[in-house]
Image 1 (cartoon, rainbow, N blue to C red):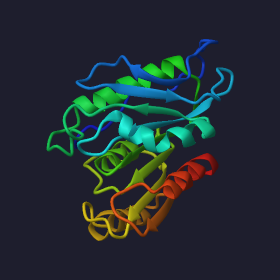
Image 2 (image 1 turned 180 degrees about the vertical axis):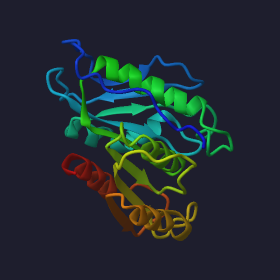
Image 3 (image 1 turned 60 degrees about the vertical axis):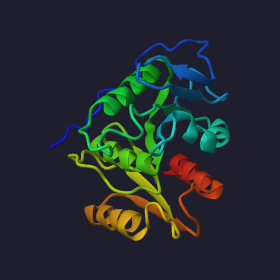
Image 4 (image 1 turned 135 degrees about the vertical axis):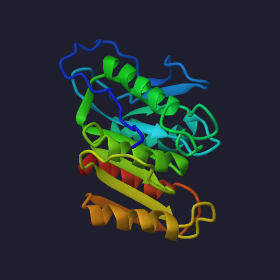
Length: 225
């Protein structure tokens, strides 16, 4: 079975810097393209913050998903970690095994976990389109790390051995011409419900997008679930 496992974990016993920088910053974690971290202006080292590993869609860049969630994340007090895939999309979706993109995500998480006080009861992985498929794959394989998975218009779940039982949020447009809803999210939702995962599913009238209302609903779900 392909190895989708991640090794990074929050460090609850660490002494975190008193002056940790907030805002948007590049991550020095290698890779062929720039990766980023966004830290809400509400962050305080003495108060653990929820975190989302955010994965972009095919042909996109790390900052694509950030544009959608940045304002909401600042208001919600989130830390967003946004790595960039090595090629035009994530390794398993490009027909390869888990490898450079999994490793980059692991390094990005380890870097942020070492520098920021992260709430280990609110560690999520999310993404849009191909990023949503990769988020489901990593999230279900690492349910002992990720407490929540947010999948906006996913296509499939990649090969992996499930571990843990993270909460799952899925959304999809009924008129999506790129990843049609029937063979994609509706099939995934039926699969996850049959497996007993705690799941929230929202369909909306629209195409291959993340409407603002869906993004707000997802982050509200993350805060309350």
